[in-house]
Length: 133
Image 1: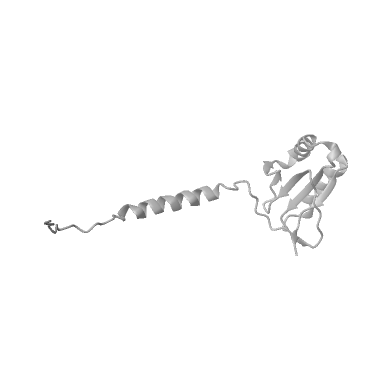
Image 2: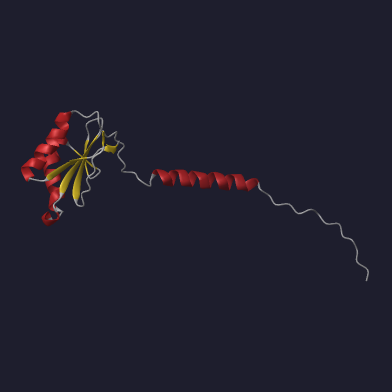
């Protein structure tokens, strides 16, 4: 048999578009990672060695700019009592709900006392959230 040697062109895989694809994938993951936890409040809590776990609760957060949040929803200071009442009504009272105060350590004590007074009138347990030492 007579086999002829054909001249073959070397095969080549074009990787020019790979850079574009990698850029768009990286951009996609960066954008989606920003939306993974959009309601996260970054607060600098005081430290404590005490631990207490509460099962059913209402979280009242106060950031360094003295903005109030009930369960990550921003609320005006004058509407705070009705907002807490609304959240407490959603929880069965037999589960012994509590109000967790999550305040930045730069927040004045008077703002924390506002929330504590609301909890006292409702006879609800108050917990101050801290960071571990």
